[in-house]
Amino acid sequence: MKKFTAIMSLAAALVASMIFGWVLANYFEAENLRLVTLCIGGALFVLSLIPMPKGVLPMSVNILTNYTGEVLDALLTNATTGNELVDGGHIRLEKTSSKFYIPRMKVGEMLQKVVEQPEDSDSKGDYNYDEKVLEPQEFMAFTTFNPKSFEKLWRPYQPKGPLVFMELPPEIQNKMLALLAQTVNFELGGHFINGEYGAGANQLFNGILTRIVADADVLKVDAPVAITEANVIATFKAVRAKIPKVLRKKKNLKLFCSVNTADMYDDALTALPNKGKNYTDTNEERYKGIPIVALADMPDDVIIAAVASVDMNTNFWGAVDFAEDYDTIQIDKLTNAGERFFFKMKLKADTNVAFGEEVVLYDARP
Image (cartoon, rainbow, N blue to C red; front, top):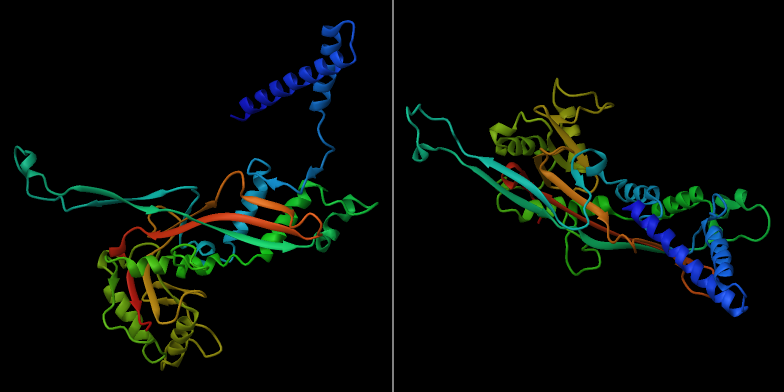
C-alpha cells in the first residue's frame, strides 16, 4: 500500500511538473514548445524530489498517524500510564478502532458410560460459543500552551535568530508531544475501574466495576456490610467462600480492593497474637494464597475476586485506540493573532468482563 501511494505521488508530481512547464513555455512563447516544456517540467520534477533539510518538519499542522508511528505509540503509552489495571498486568488490552468481540467458549459435561454403537441421540455435552463486545467510546484531551515554555527543548537546534515554531527536529517534536501528554490528566486509571458511559461530562466509557455491577451472572456476596479492621479478615473469608471451587487454585486469580481495605487487612494481621508481622513491617498481601491487589481508584467497601491477567484467559478486557487516523492529534495556533497554541488528541476506550459467573463481588457501598 505504501509503495502504491509513493508511485502515485511521483506520477502526480511528474504530471503537475509537465503541465506547469507547458504553461511557462507557452507563456514565454518558446519556439520549440515541446522541448522547452520537457526541460522545465523535468527540472521542476527533480526539484520536487529534493527532501527538506534533515531534521526539519512542519509543526503547526495536524499530525497524522502516517506522520510518525513513534509519536502515536508514545502518546497511547502515556495515555495508559498510571492505569493500575494496565501497569499491573491485570487486564488484556486490545487496540481497535471499532468493535472487538471477546470470545467465550463453554462446554457441557461429556463423560458417560460406553455405548457400543453410539448415535447422535447418545451425544452428551455441547460446545456453546458466544461473544461479548468491546465497543470503544470516543473522548478527547484538549489543552492550550505557550510554545515559549518549551523553548529550551529546541534552542540548541536554532541558536540564532527568533524562535521559529514552524520548524522543529522530529525528535524534539516527540519530546514535546510526550511532555504535553503528561500535562493532560487523562484519568484513564479511574475510568478503567469506575467509568460510566453517559451524557455527563465525565461519563466517557464503562469501567470494569461498572460492568461487574451490571452483570446479572456475577456472584454477589450476600448482606455485605462496611469493611472495618474488625471484620476485614472475615470479609475476605466470605469472598473466598463464594469463589467457585474450580477457580480457587487457578493461575492469576486475584482479590482486588481499595488501598484503605488493604491497609486495614495489614493492621488486622499485625494485631493477631503470635501471627503476622511486627508493626514496623508490612504483611504479605495475600489471603489463603490468593494475591490481594490494592488499587488507588477502587472505592472502599468493595472487593472483587477474578482471574485477571494480560493473556487470553483473563476475565478483564479493555480496548483503546486513537479515534480517527487523520484527525487524531492537532497542534496549531489557538487564534491567528495570538501566541498560544492548542493540543488536541482524540481517543477511544472501553472495558468488559468475559465471564460474569466467574467473578465474585462484595459491594457494601450505600
